[in-house]
Length: 276
Image (cartoon, rainbow, N blue to C red; front, side, top):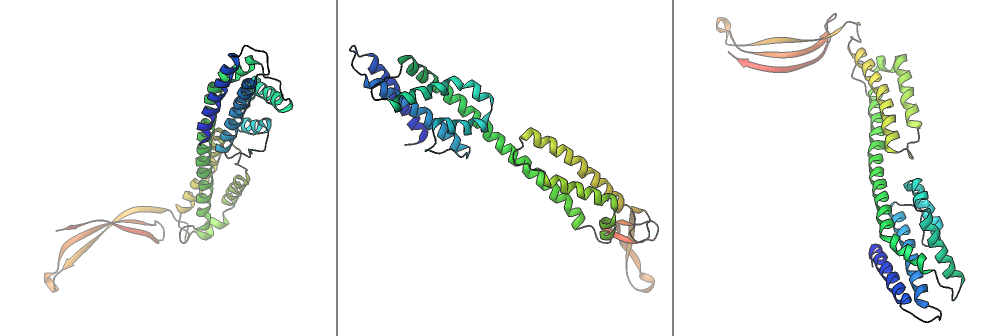
């Protein structure tokens, strides 16, 4: 039987025994009240264990209600401690009476209270767990984004464009920014909530943008002579024929990245070829 089905069964069983207990007119020990108590206590114990397991918490079947409850609430929301304090207190009172006596019966008002609170508290706790699970997914996504930003930026230092390796590695200002990246890596993001991670990523972005601007500035000048790198277009005319019959039949336009000063070529890409 699935946990949720078991919880529903225990709740209904508790209600049935409470009603049977209320139907007795004699003053003999009322076993139905005790059975109702066992069922509703087990309902709450199973509920808390199931929700804790869904969040991969260190809840255990051998732990008492208080311990599993603390592990769950600590992960969910401190406000839940106050919100459900009276409920958990009453569950414990009923459980203790059943565990430490043979004939004592839980108060009918306590049983009615726990039964009436069951569905609402179950729905409320499941909602908190759902929010927490969504938050964990968001946090994992953000944490992954945070780590990838750092690793991707470090690649600029590890694999600079050809001819620029020495300029990148020896630039003192960039060395300082690389140290900033190392400081970001040291931050323990394991327990940060999504809001805190988003703020941290914003701060990281400032450093990444600064590094990007500095590297773009380095790439703007020729590593050979220090001249300015420019983008321009060049045209190549293609001829055909022999001797005096040579004539142009097409031309190609190229995009060229080169040094304005010494002419060093960095990149040349064909834009278009037109035929005459």
